[in-house]
Amino acid sequence: MPEKESGEMSRRYLLKALGGGAALLGLSKLPSAMAQVSGQAIQPMPGFTGPDANPYWGAVGPFVIYPQKLPLIQLTDRPVQLESPRHYFLTPFTPNAAFYVRWHLEDIPNAVSLSEWRLFVEGHVEKTLALTMSDLIKRFKSISIVAVNQCSGNSRSRFQPRVPGAQWGNGAMGNALFTGVRLKDLLDAAGVKAGSLQVQFEGLDRGRGQKDSAVHRYKKSLNLDDPVINESIVAYEMNGEPIPMLNGFPVRLVVPGKFSTYWTKSLTWIRVLNEPDANFWMTKTYCVPDTPRGNTTPKDVRDSLVKLVPVGTMPVRSFIIIPDGSGKIPLEMPVIVRGIAFSGSGRVVSVEFSADDGAAWSKARLGEDYGRYSFRTWEVTWIPKHTGKYVLAVRATDEKGNTQPDEGVWNPKGYLWNRIERQEVMVDVSQ
Image (spheres, helix red, strand yellow):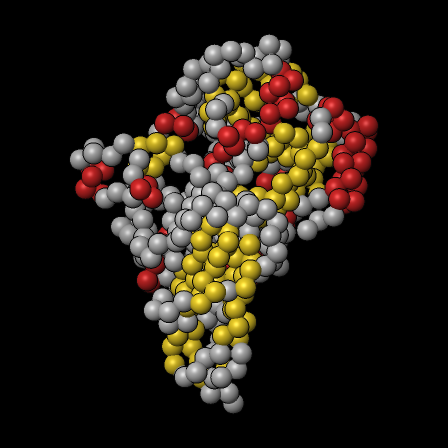
């Protein structure tokens, strides 16, 4: 875990930059659609259809390099969608440079001047606030929380029948230590008026449609009576460093336990509303069937039998990171199987491993507990007893008793996938 000292150093760095009135971070130019790594164009992998035909853990696409980022898998460049490769999930904290990227609108900020930037708290409040970065750091108590940020459509490529949208593999997620100020403290400073219902968030990104159109501005809201309001923070640090530009510099909202659709990047407006937010991003998309697991059928959707509600809490999930099936495993040699698990409903308390496609299960060893919203690493020592193909599987259980099912889910937007993960491996006699 990043140490407290590194956080204090980054805050001093921010304040020093403020004193100079300079733009602290900027991306001089975002890459074009033709991605290059070391001067060579990276060709995309072959296409696939559905979970059984997909040999890849991550998305199918070229590796690209963006500013402040290691090579990531590109799904689209407008808006920018980049997936983290599998090997970055061996540790509980995802490096900033390897953290996935998902924007909704085409025009994203590529430079922010902290001498000009303000965070506005407005709407149905007693006093409108226009806060500088210095205000956030000096006037409000800092707080840190470890939390998983996961795209609602993570693993969408596993859906059958296929659904539209970014065909993410499993890497549209990451875990980090976020430091900032409590959202509740900012709302209290502004004074929320009686009769307020929701709080809305908006960042600096913009779409290319008309200014009044749904795709020009990305706005999300939380109910003021949702307990997550008391846990959410406006973060200015990520793993002890300023937040990367592509992940929402200068500040982003952190809503622990909920999908990243609520984690507004480059946050600039916080608005208290006294009526329900009916904008496109709340009522027309990022919605799931009001059914167990958000599950439905294409027929029920066509027949308009499905009531949709905003997507919210992340279900429990777990993943095998190694072995990854890329090489043969020696017979009767101990193998350390490693992975991660998490849940939006509470800390992971149990991870079970199977080496026979789920016929028998054994307890895995859990790694350090960094909090109820964090990745929890796990490992198990496995000794294969015969040659040939094995199907490894993993499932997790959280403190609320939620356990991963062994059935897929289907809804028209491709959200909430959390089926038990499997990995085929081959065992052979050691040469």
